[in-house]
Each structure stands twice: as C-alpha cells, then as structure tokens.
Length: 102
Image (cartoon, rainbow, N blue to C red; front, side, top):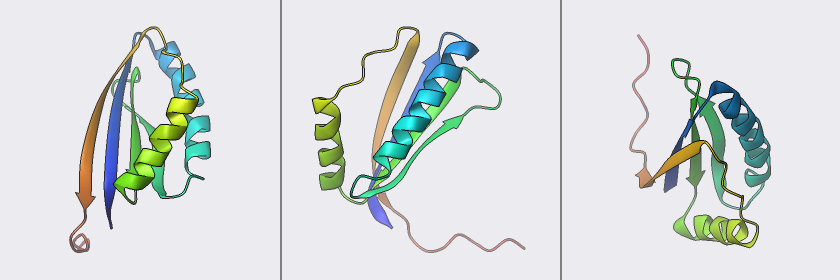
C-alpha cells in the first residue's frame, strides 16, 4: 500500500480540554473518511498521558491529500486555545507482510 501519511500530535493544557478535542476530532474523522482517496483518518489517545492525542491520516496519493487540504482551506477550523500541535508528513510504502506471530 502506498500513499501519503500524516501524523499530527496534539498536546492539550488539560485532560478535560483533550476530552473535548478528541470528541470533536472523532466527528471530523467520520466526515474525512468519506472523501475520495482517504484510506485512514483516525484519532488515538495516549494511555499514559491523556492530555496527548494523535491524528493519523493515510491518503492514496498526494493529489487526494491536496483535495482534502483544499476542502479544509475553504472551511478552516478555528484554533483551539490551550492545544498545540506538530505535523509530520511521510511518503508511505509498505514492503511485504509483517512476520507471522509464533
């Protein structure tokens, strides 16, 4: 499977703020997963640091990601005070199957 992966890590000032943001992100994930070329769009929460969560995106091509970005630019989300983020982009290429458990 090839494509483009995005990992966006969020740090909230409090667990309660993270709770709200994760709930909102889950709704956004449902919508984004309907977009053409979206292979994965999910939010994950840290079990050890619950104020931290990650949005994981996987798109089938840079073009699909560009269309998604255009949709976001037309309807931007307002910044959420008390939450910082860092984004990482990767070209993705999985080679072979993972080893079977023994």
